Image 1 (cartoon, rainbow, N blue to C red):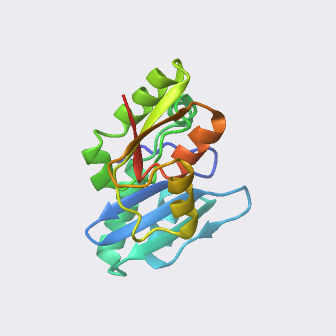
Image 2 (tube, helix red, strand yellow):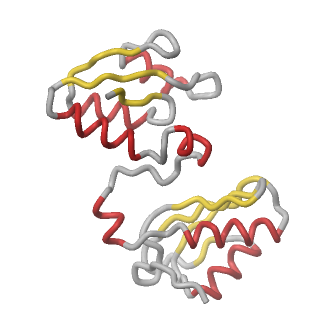
Image 3 (spheres, rainbow, N blue to C red):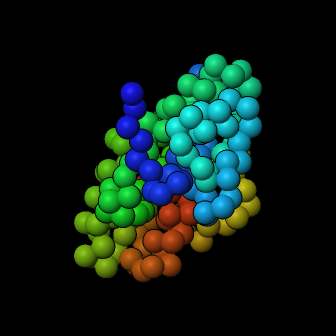
Length: 174
């Protein structure tokens, strides 16, 4: 038996579950939306008692892997109090990047430490080869021109927004 953290008839936050080459994206939906899902994911949502959710199956269409990815997503749900405690935590981050950056906690703690000094140091760590032009412009707007370059910027809400937009490409240096 699995205990799920639900928010009424939907899930408390967006989450991605992975199993093999299957990925399942679950997004909370407004009351009355229903279960927007295909085949195996729909059955799991119905059995779990989730009545309002948006889903997308990415990768393989193998039903066994899709079901296991759906369970991984459901097990990754946090309760509403935990989500409210840290609203900026990125739940869509690729698991390989999370492991490399130590679970994302280092990024947030470095941001909190530098916020008091009025400046923030940003390091470009991942190439933007497969990124959109919008992300490329954001990297350039931060003043980054070369991979592994570190720049120091004023710590403003605008700068934080730019960092958040390309958080998978940059990291905040202590």
